[in-house]
Image (cartoon, rainbow, N blue to C red):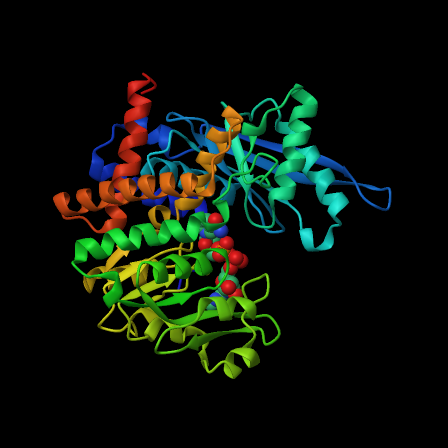
Length: 428
Ligand code: NAD
């Protein structure tokens, strides 16, 4: 076993290097794309509730903006590091490119533990953050969004501080804002629905009707619940779903072989996506161990909870019937497990394609904000469907033509698009 600590940026660069070599990119393009174009590290002096001042550290990294303004979330996390933010900003560049959005990649973070901060202190951090970066973000430069432990409220404080500094109204400076304050309808559904738009297209390619399929889902939060909603609407049956139980500090899988009842389960689920075990038993669900979701005899697996959940150890327990894995979560499959899926010929919709519905809807929010004209939910979701379907078809066509694994095809398309934009601009 390696004793080297895991470094997300080293991993992102290694992934890039592999594709860059297969694409035959020239040295200058490689040098440009394996590092962020710009990064900002700053101190955030913040007034605390007890009157003292505490200095936090903040980052904003703009990996590449050849295809459009940088786009990516701002995380509040005690273990935030510059390298994590660099890696996430690079992944955002590829995600926006594979979804064919006219956006680049960025990411931000503040080293802090929001659980130990009052809302007033969090507001002070948001405003201090924007005071440091207000000249280097903006609707045509870099557009942040919520991420781990930040919400629509944080985004609204940031928008407000930006407008205090620059004057005027600039709703397009940030996305993920509350509806009515520059937010978009459909954002709540966007990621989960986006996963299923790609599942629907993949099933077509596999020649299987959704009505004839069953699925097992890991995670019953924002992504999982809306993925289940749309998958059921197109005719599929979800027979198992797993989630984390906060009281017991372990995960459980809830199974009903004739199909779970989404509305009934939602009623007994807390706001963190935890299903009440006793009540579920009362509704006739079998309660199984947390990782049982992966060994169900189904056609489709949708990991929609967290990273590293399909591993070399448990991938061998995946049923022979499974034809499709749609990665709703970020990084759910370890490289070892990925190998197993590939060897077994399972169709994988990779995370940065499957869950691109979130950023695609953020793009639609930005467009609406810049026009100051907001669409009905159906219009947003209709555009989301068209964009996700077209992104999926681009990748699957590349996979078919070049006989590539879907993940490699998605990386190839994304990196080639960004490299081409850099070349067309005359940068390299
Ligand atoms: P969430 O917090 O709303 O829900 C997470 C769910 O996972 C909860 O039901 C929780 O109980 C469950 N869970 C946690 N640990 C588990 C475990 N060990 N076993 C089984 N279930 C477990 O989060 P979300 O917004 O639904 O995001 C889920 C994943 O999707 C994350 O990887 C996130 O980065 C990714 N993602 C989310 C969005 C978005 O728009 N929400 C966009 C892109 C990617």
